[in-house]
Image (cartoon, rainbow, N blue to C red; front, side, top):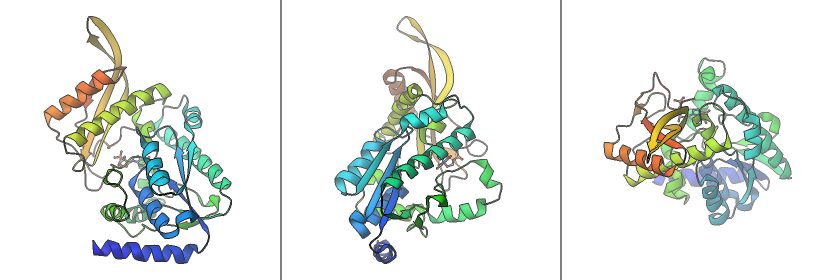
Length: 319
Ligand code: XMP
C-alpha cells in the first residue's frame, strides 16, 4: 500500500538521520515485531546493524533456524545467536509458580542479552519492536492493576541500565500495519503472519516445572497443532493456536499394554485484541487429525484435550 511505502521511506530516512555512523543492536525473537524492526534497520543501515537472538531453549520448533535463514542467509545481517538453553533450564529448575517462572526468564534474558551486547564494542543504539498498543498499555500499566495480572517481559523488558539509546521505529503502528510493512520489506509471509508467541515461550505452556524432556514433547505436539491448522487453511483466521503440556498422567492402552502417559491440551483462540477471546470452533475432522497425530507421533502422550474456555474468565495461556 502506498501509505506504508511512504512510512517505510520516511522511517528509513529518520533512522539514518538519527543513527549516523553509529552501531545499532536489535534483539530478535522469531516474532513479527522484532523481525520487522530488524528488516527495517537492515534496509536503513545495513552492516551497522547487529542482531542478537537469545535462544532460551523455550522457542518453538525450528524457530532458531527460521531466524538464521532470514537474517543471516537472506539478509546478510550481523547475527549473534546465544545458545542459552542450559542457563535458562538451570534457572528454572524446581520452579513451578508461573510468575516466578516469568521473572526468572526475564532476568536470565537480560543477563544473556547484556553479555552478548557488551561483546559488540561500538554499540550505541538499541532498537525495540514497541508498537502503538504497547505504548498505551505500558503507560497505563505503570502503577495500575493491569501490571500485576501478568508480567509481560517484552514490554520495556530491557532496562535502561544497559546504557543504550533507544530507537522504536514501530511505535506509531498497529499490528496489521507492522505485518504489511514486513511484507513490503521483503520478509516471507510465513514469518510475517506468525501467531504471537509469549516472551517466556514454551515455559508457560509447560505447566509446572520446566524440564528438557517436557520441552521436547511439547515442541513436537505444538508443531503438529500449527501444521494441521495451516494445512486446513485456517492459520490466518485463527489468532493463536498451540499445545500445552499438562502436568497430568492418565491411563491408556496401546496394543495390549497399559500406558500411563502425559496429556496435552490444544488451545486455539480467535480474538481482535487479546483482551477477550473465544475458543476457535475448529472442524471436528481437523481436531481428530491433530489428536491422532499427536498421540501417534509424540512419544509420551496418550491423551489430547481441546480447550473450550473463553477469555474471560480463562486466559489464553494456561499460566
Ligand atoms: P493471556 O494468557 O493473558 O494472554 O490471555 C494474552 C496475550 O499475551 C500473551 N502473553 C504474553 N506475552 N509475555 C509475553 O510477551 C508474557 O509473559 C505473556 N503472557 C501472555 C499471550 O500469548 C496472548 O497473546
